Each structure stands twice: as structure tokens, then as C-alpha cells.
Image 1 (cartoon, helix red, strand yellow):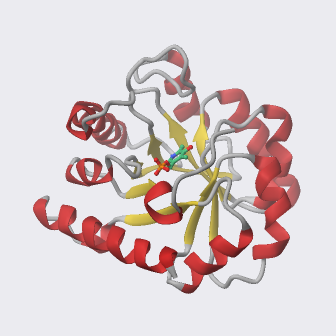
Image 2 (cartoon, helix red, strand yellow; image 1 turned 90 degrees about the horizontal axis):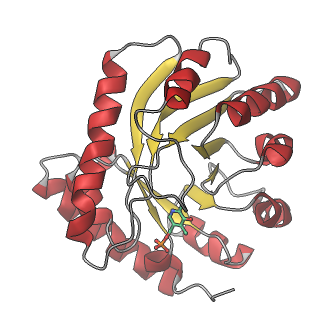
Length: 234
Ligand SMILES: *Cc1c(COP(=O)(O)O)cnc(C)c1O
């Protein structure tokens, strides 16, 4: 019950932010980040109309997958850092990998998707704040360019856009320049019209800053706490 109310409240805030930016709310996907929460919570969110879910660990979702397999129309995204040795499992259980941060990982995912006879959607994770402790490719890096170039031969992958987690700030306004920078990178990349690269998705914004992210062009907000409640600290 609480989850349905939370979703309704988040959707109102999402729509209000879209209106401020003169954007259509339907252009923004609300992803429910269900990591650490049980299958029952996911079912509740699905019953309330949520269809796109984000999990950050392969093993955790592998354990939940059976319990959510009958949820019609649900789409599962891996949003956490993926180690190459778990690429096959990830390709098997997720529709999309939203935090691809190396060419080597993209190649592993392509091979795994090929074996499974499926197409895997992916986003390139960009370390927009240049933080040493965070994963993601640097915006102007050689590897970012190489990954985009490689898309042409990675035929089992569909590159759909970019994802970022900006440096944490108490005041969500302080994240605005980072969101803007990701949007500018997306636009500049889209202009290059690279083969087999779509640059539509901008996955940015979490519980505390998703409204600012929407004002800066986000097309997918990843919301955990504001939907499912506080997570227990490990
Ligand atoms: C946990 C997580 C989120 C959700 O964070 P909240 O602050 O709980 O909304 C979003 N994106 C990623 C990559 C995450 O790991």
C-alpha cells in the first residue's frame, strides 16, 4: 500500500518537473530501483503500474528472478557495476545493462548475447564528475570513443544512450551542472551519427535529485528510496 502511494507521489513530482521544463511527462521513464528489497515489494510496485526496474547486483537479482518471472511487461535493468566474469549471467537475466564502463565488458556482453540469441540494450556509464572512486568512462577518454566505434561490430548490443551518477551533494541544485554536461555529451555524440549507436536515453537522477535531472533533460530517473523506503545499511 505504501509503495503504491509513494509511486503516485513520485509520479506527481516527475510530472511537475516535466511541466517546468516544458517537456511531456511520458518522455520520462520512472525506473523503480528495487535492490535490497524483496520480491513482494517488486510485485506491489508492479501492481501499482511500475514496469521498469533496476537492480545493482547480478547475484541478488538471479535469486529474485524466479519470483518475478510472471510479472507481465516488466523490464529488468542492471544499473550497478558489472564484472566481466558475470557478463554471461547478466545477459541471461536482464533486458538491459545500464552501466557499461569498458570496451572489454561490452565485448563480453555481445558474445554472451550472441550465444543466447538475444539483443541486449545498454547504456554507457559516464563518470561525469571525474571522481576516482567511481566507475564509468571519462567523457573525453579514448575508451569512450573506442566503445562507440566498436558498436558497429557488436551486433548483439544496442547502445541506447548514457547514464551517470553525479558526485553526491546535499543540495540537488549542485548536481545540475553535471546533469547538463551529460546531456551536452549525449547531444554531441548523437550528432556524430555513428553506426548502430542511438543516443536517446539519458539515465540520470535518483530520489534526492530527479527533479533537477528532469529539468536538465533526463529521460529515465532511477528512484529507489522514494518508492521502496530506506535501505538497510550493509
Ligand atoms: C541505488 C541506486 C539508485 C537509487 O538510489 P535512491 O537514492 O535510493 O533513489 C539509483 N541509481 C543507482 C545506480 C543506484 O545504485
